[in-house]
Length: 280
Image (cartoon, rainbow, N blue to C red; front, top):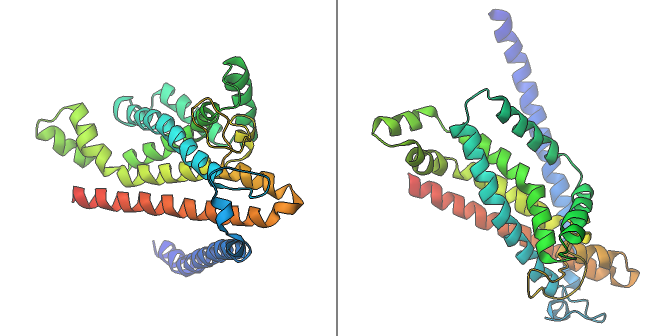
């Protein structure tokens, strides 16, 4: 017992120092990258970049910005309900230790590690060619939904598991049924964790390039319907960076992309705080 206490006394300060170093290094890298992009990109922001129509002269990012928002909303509308309800089934309804549950979890973890280019090729073969959707917002949105589905499912599952069983037992003791307990007690308590997974998924959709090139296409105009080709901000930045004449506009696009991600994260965090405060 004394040896265990001594080991903890020795390793505790060491782990504390290592944790702080890791946090400091991570913060420095983030600030360095963001600072570099802002220094390069902010001076290049000009009204012509926000013109409604893209031309080779103004290389406007506005169509890509609108397409990015549309792509994100479509992917989240498809992935979030499926991921959340799947996690509810695995945690609340499936028997613990069920082999079927283990298979689903292993499949989700495997899918989470697949490179995005593989998802892009699958989306092109299945949605673009087999289903005949061509390069379109719908094909890109479905591909991105499949890509982020394991992330949303696993984070929701972990959030539900972290809810104490005493909450459920108290609800059952008051006469509530299974369905009411899940949606009135367990799910609201897990909302902050679920929103954390959704934020990560949104960040992946907004920053994805490889999968969308093969599914959504690169047409630089606002998608008026789900079947229209849609260039997102990340694809737009990739195309501009490949052209030596528009590298400055690529930096400006990167600034807008970072601001968009920060705005979405801030909105989601505010929503989580309001929902948590309402529960209290």
